[in-house]
Amino acid sequence: MCPPRSLGRMWRIYPRLRDRWRGLLDRRLSDPTVSVWPGPAPQPPARAYVPPTERKRFYQNVSISQGEGGFEINLDHRKLKTPQAKLFTVPSEALAIAVATEWDSQQDTIKFYTMHLTTLCNTSLDNPTQRSKDQLIRAAVKFLDTDTIWWFLQ
Image (cartoon, rainbow, N blue to C red; front, side, top):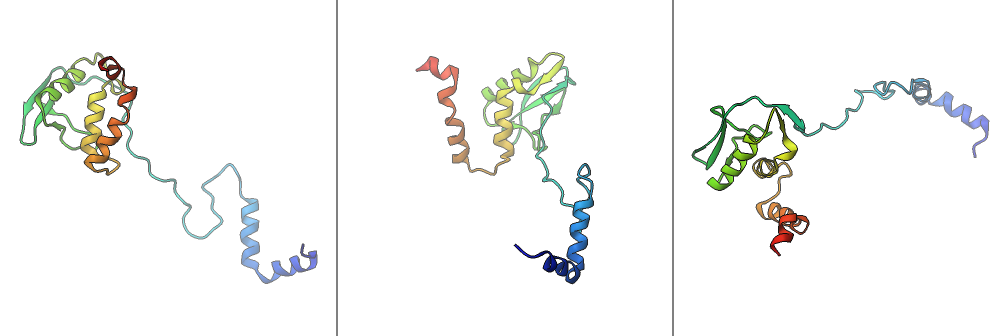
């Protein structure tokens, strides 16, 4: 341990260090935006877009149409888009009918947590984790053991 005399000498030699420590000790703990270091205060990392769990239903009719990239779902003649604003297209008509049925079955509010096929298609189309096709398939197949329908088929 340093004798008190040398500690006092250090504060005299390094006044900028002394001032920074005083500012650190004097700042209010309730105000996290105050910074004693030069430059802007560090910002928290940006969060990914998370859609609301429920939203008021804004459409009357749900239909499907065949487009260039596959089948599209239309809500009152407006094309459905993914959370990253890409056009929602699926390769098969059966999947398009199933997704359209999910949207049509919503009552007064849209409950996104009940639309599992839409969520799975959005993840596949947007690919927020930048995974390859094989990685996405392996991640989806990993959960088949916990699927109730899978247990009935075995």
